[in-house]
Image 1 (cartoon, rainbow, N blue to C red):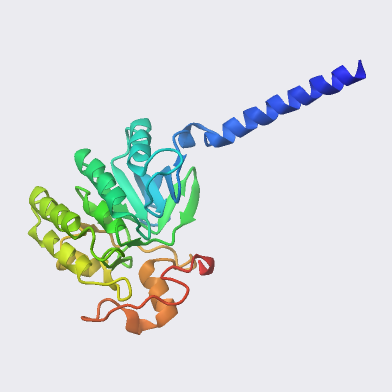
Image 2 (cartoon, rainbow, N blue to C red):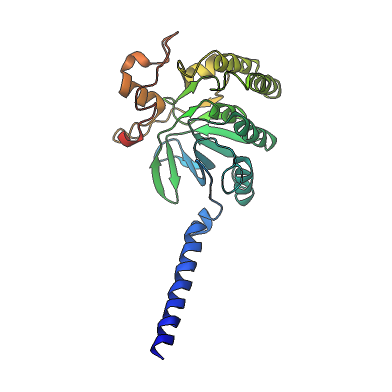
Length: 272
C-alpha cells in the first residue's frame, strides 16, 4: 500500500514537472508565446525604445548570429511564424554580429516581401522591463537591415561594421545583386555603394561606419531619432564600445579610418 502511494505521488510530481517545463518552453504567457530560440539566434517580441520614456514601437528583436539549420527550423521560418503570431508588428530590430550570407538573404527577402521596417536600438521594453542592448549590426546582419522599407536608428551613436564574407568573396554576386535590386525597389541608388563598401573590406580589416555617414553617403539608414539613453545606463553601442577599447581615434567619422577588432571583439558584453 505504501509503495503504491509513493508511486502515485511520484507520478503527480512528474506531471507537475512536465506542465512546468511546457509552460516555460512556451514563454510562460501570451506575450512570449511565440518566442522561438534556434541555433545561435534568438527572436522575441518586445517594444523598441528611443529612450526610457518612448517605448512605443512593437517589434521583433533578433539577437545573435545568423546561422543555418537551427534546431527549431530556419531563421526565416521562425521569424515568419512570430510575425503571424503578432500581426501588430511592422518592425524588425537587430543586434547581430552577422553570420551566414544565404540565411541573411532569406530573411531579407521575407522582410522585403512583407514591407516591414527595420531598426537598431540600444533599448527595449520586454513586458515592462527595460533592457539595455549591446547593439551591433555587422557583416551579413546589414543585408537584413537593408531590406526594410524604413531603416531606422533609434539612437544616433550606433555603428555598423562592414567586411566581405570569410570564404574569399564566395557570395560576391549575391551581395551585389541584392543591393542592386534594393536600390531599384527602394528608389535609393546610393544603396549600390553598400555592396562596394562591403566587398572592399577583408575580415582582417573591417571598417566601422556611423549612422550619420550611412544616412548621408549611402542611404542605408533612412531615419535617425535623436534619442539618448540615460547617462547612468550602460553605454553598449558598437561605437561607444569601440571608443572604450581603442580611444577616440577609432571614430568612424574620420575619413579613411579603418577599425581593427580589439582582442576581445567589438562588443565586450561583460562590461555592459
